[in-house]
Image (tube, rainbow, N blue to C red; front, top):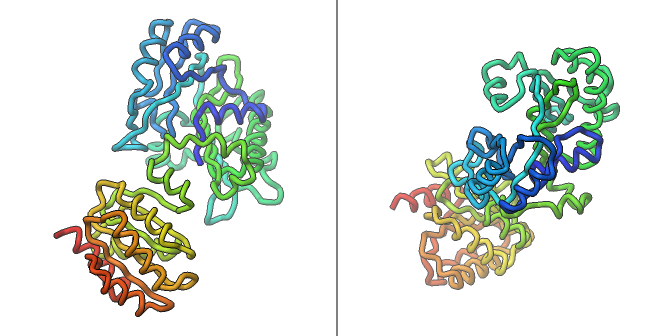
Length: 387
């Protein structure tokens, strides 16, 4: 689960991490009021969406008068902001963060993430902070520093000092940097984060370290332990189909292909998508209906898949272990009749009562293509999209 920048900064403040003085605005009048409440003669108006690259896309505006605040807020609120991370559809801007400006002398990059291969939290830093950090990582990897944290000892002092020296910080900044870094590590662990990124971490004219921007992602599997964070989820920033699937208890992720997938089991779903790609197709989604799928669950899943206008065929791949194939077939038939599906539906069943399930599909009188195996199912689904 992603947090907005303003939510991330509220969390940073709980751990004594310095952030610019700012205020949330949901209307033009709010933005003007926020600027009037923040000392200074210049402000930054920042679109709040769950995507990086806002600055390059025009979602971050430096303004030097109240009139410019009003104009910037009017230009952003209610508009769709498209960045390199959320293209091509973009996301609607419903909230703005109005912040003070700072006298910035240096920009650094700092992040923490879980390295799955190492099974450790890794701290990444670079003296080349700012909007072009991705290019730095690609073309100048030697400028990227990292420290791997031991799960028992955590982030220790010498690792913080190593990064401070590598970033070329002044002597008087090393201790504050180490304190900030250890605070971030504590925040990361306490809240079961999967990503914490500060880009940039700035050094002001007074030598202070301030988190100018922040991105936080919380591990979905740990949200039951963090009710307050879970309540901050902004469903308007997620794919609408994903929000509906979540409410229905389904695991759904939208993709860019044209073959809708309905599978029981995450591993089988991944294998199904791989085979679709292998045979020249493109999956439109990941959808795991779970081992105990019912007719009602299957009907909801069909409706979610069909909400994607790009879907030209549906591949249903069910292994009847917990749930018998005849029960699954009954659910598929009921769902196809209720939803009124007009595109090809390819079904591959395997497991308990598989022959009975296949016979039920054949006798249904519906245009359901029964596949003999997984490879056959993938090939028929791909072929159906090219008719």
